[in-house]
Image (tube, rainbow, N blue to C red; front, side, top):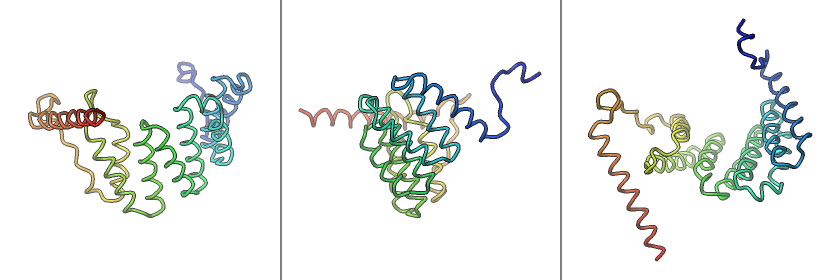
Length: 213
């Protein structure tokens, strides 16, 4: 009865699910070739290969995307292809190679810099270099604490950074404070803290504009 109500395919094992995804994405690649749809489907193909722990196959697909005309025209495609190649090398346990690719990702576009630093810290921690990993993560933690006018920065990435810091030293992560006001509203102290951070961000922005004159 549950199956009749939910037609979503179900698979007994993750391996069978990855095989089904791989076959479906490859059909799209065959049908659409070098069109946008074909290249985007290749990302799905590479992801399924990672799920199957086929690091060589995944790297080859990501590398093909990286060298495509679409990657040259679209910075997001290029960045995700670099990230995917790094994941494939990480799966291979080539942590130095993955680290170099994550450094390349940092320089592709400032929008990927924080994510790239997080991945670099993960690799450094995996390699046993806790001091460098800690330095990167603490820098990220500080940068991501500063809110923007649109709200908090990258809450998901902030949670990932905290998770890695806990592995190094649980005391490096501040305990989350419950909102002090009624029904989850912010307390006056929390509001004042946020105001100060916003004012600091505004001053930094003004100073940046001033340097350009």
